[in-house]
Image (cartoon, rainbow, N blue to C red):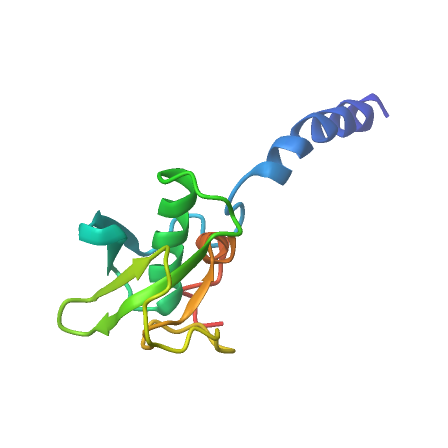
Length: 135
């Protein structure tokens, strides 16, 4: 009986830390990496290695915007240059590009200039454990 009490106390002590753990469980070690390069005029170029999934590019810019630029999670991020297969890069900005439709679509894409989402939504893709497992 004492074993169960000690085990229960240990679980209760560890539980808050596990609840705050990012990516705990399947897929802790992401199979991709992103690099964000600041360019001129507030443009940021994201390149990915290990995948060409749209969520990888959104994860890269969302995480960069919140952690490095210290933007709010509600800050919108816009695609200013769509995905280029040869370069495997996408360019983003925190300001809307002029003359394009900025109504967000219903799917996650990096193939349309003007596509956008909040920094918090973009960063949320970093915590998707099933990103590269084909689910």
